[in-house]
Image: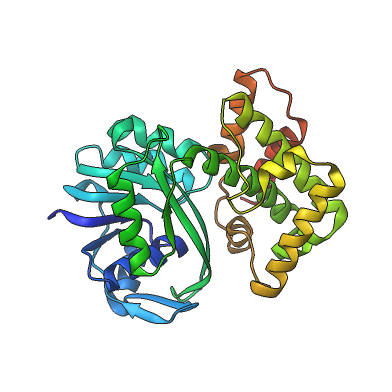
Length: 322
């Protein structure tokens, strides 16, 4: 298979949104997908609606091991599939690789496969939902962040961010990528846990004072883990995590209420991807996200009881349902 500008693993909501925009902008894009999704794309292209509406033909590959090279590799599949997929791509010539997945384990897996120097940090403050017919509903286009894991500024990151941004997916290069990744993970872990246990639209548990206090507690525990690892938290990734961690309970609940009101007015039907997976009967991302944080905390001998509780609860829900 000839080298392409972008090889994107996974054509779920985020992979489809990024791939469709890049292909529409004239870049050579190859989607690495399962057979059923490949058939949908062959028949209808990548179909996007919501913030924008278009259909874009994109070539697909169903055997990841056949990829020989790509200037940029983007991992956009579910976290539990990462290790096997990355192993199958070890023979490909990859310029840079980054993942828009949830959690922090993703960077370690990519670095083990391609070398840390070829891996960028990334986080997606974007939202979309894969519909039953294969169309993707694009609901939020805030920011896709990319950056060097060592905190340096580089031309390759700036060029990559400019390219994706010009294609229509809001993207920024940021040297503080680890702080942003951990801050997003703290927010995601808390909202993921509440979405599975309440099964509510996102804004509802952010506006309720009782559930908001639980969100605050989980954010603070993941924030403690990040700080112990030497990471400086940020207010610029999804939620104002740094302020939530250092303020009073009431101040933190007020910050969540402000964000909840924004969600209620701007994205009232937003549901966490984990809730979408739960309702669709798909496996949940547990071990590579909450489990990874719990194991890291155990290594550091940190006591994070809320995180432990939700890890066991969500993992149990996933097993019982299956």
